[in-house]
Length: 199
Picture 1 (tube, rainbow, N blue to C red):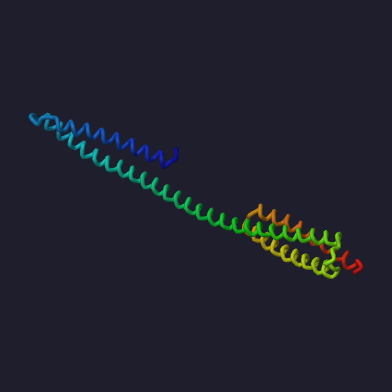
Picture 2: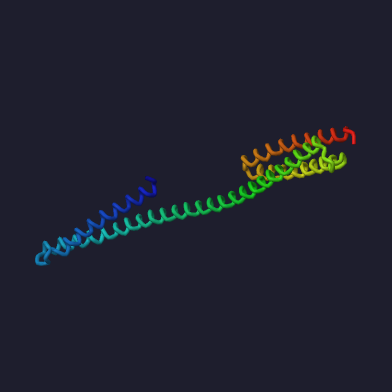
């Protein structure tokens, strides 16, 4: 139980006890017949005690209201913290979704380039009639340029992920850059092979 909750419970109990005592004393003051000096004295004394008890009751009520106000403030602070957290969560989710979307697009383009590389290699093996040596070199260079552009985009996504603290996307884009670098080395080797091959 928190300190605020304990204070509220203690104030509530004290207030209820004070109300019960006040009620008992008030009933005593009302029930005594005012038919003798002794009863008049007792009633006067009871009324004085009621007055003093009402002052105590006001003090207890103030303590209870103070505890209620403190709990209300705590609840408001918690609500504000949760609202701020929800806003932060929405921002982070949107930022992550945007990076994930960009990473997904990187993967799609990388698959297309990989397919182009496979077709290029197969075309050299099969040597179709419409596939000239010059066209093969030009296609390989075009693939190399696409890989360069894709690596630059991957670097940008990697930097964005790192700056925003998204470690998973950061690792994924780094791994993709490594695969693209290896593919670039392969295409460079293929270009050298084509340039050294007879027309």
